[in-house]
Length: 298
Image (cartoon, rainbow, N blue to C red):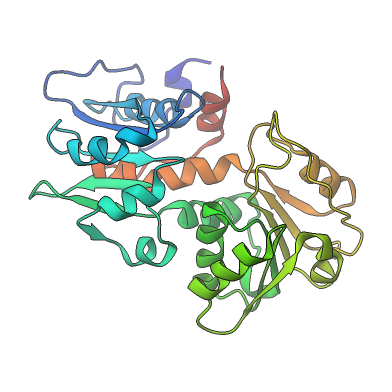
């Protein structure tokens, strides 16, 4: 399939890639390591689709140079950057201004350069998570019942914050290290709707759950499998795994086999990129099946 065949209906480009000029707007992704990132392919595809004079580049930055690199972004003329592990909390501390959702999560994954040359930070992971559920399971309502979140890291914080903002009636955080989950809940829970339990006690948490989300790396290529008995989970519950390599994780395969609706993790990556792309390049890009294929294409 040619690029022209995959261009969204509202794209204004001719369908072929446009090489950046000396006046191109440049953004990128900062992290360490960065070779695994699909963000350059994602944003590069959008730039080609919409015929934008721009570029999006990987910015491999070791932890001991992260602060220096973040403060150098405005001086280098970049319009912004995505931030991936392990620099999201460093980026949060480096910002001059923050969105409310970034302040609540305590981490930044999207940076924009202000007119005064400062760093403005946003957290779009929660937005990407909810948009992925909305598109992957049309008609599903986050308010229908309790959500169970596996993990208590940065991704879990963004997911929990998004669930609370969207009106989830209960959010149950399950983690191997209970103390870390308790810290997450203490930071985010303002309405008394969050609870904590060890991962080993998942059965009780799943009994009446409407949503199960895995935010851990368990089940990812090269990582141990997620061992979880889904028998207590209601058959109408939705299951989402943030892992997208493989696209169908063992958790999703097991949920699908017992009749649960499933949503893979790739859509979260695609949708979380939209706010940054719009801020940097002036277009709210579409997420389409063709985009999924382009991002997954090796």
